Amino acid sequence: MDGRKVIAVGVVAVCVNAVLGFVSETATLLAVTPVGILVYLVVGVALPQLAVYRRTASAGALGASVLVGVLSGVVLVAALLDGGLWIDWGSGFATLLLLALLGALLGASGREFVDGYRN
Image (cartoon, rainbow, N blue to C red; front, side, top):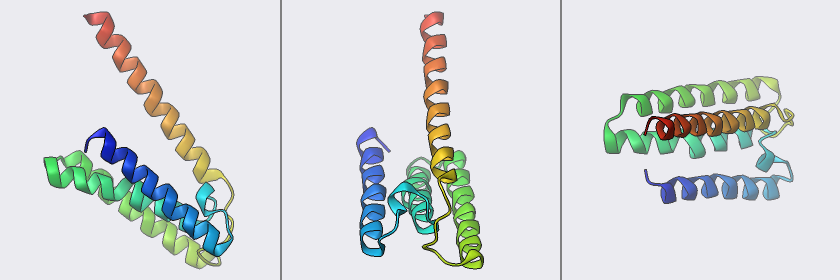
């Protein structure tokens, strides 16, 4: 997927969560409810990775899509056992997303530095 499609998918995930949050009067946009977490996992990660796999036949993309799909199932079951899809789970998932973003940013910066140093 090119950069524009990745940005579009991210915007769609945020918009879906914003609409769900408005309708349910919960903080799904901040990924503090199971529904918010599921939307970010499925719309923001699993489906784009599946699209990458279909386009490139990358085993890594397929693995990531399946892993996130399984994680989504675990979140769904845990939410149903814990009291529902709209309860407040706190900001733990949002913190994990932030750490993943920072890790990807630092990793990409480090790779670019090494590539620039070698050239």
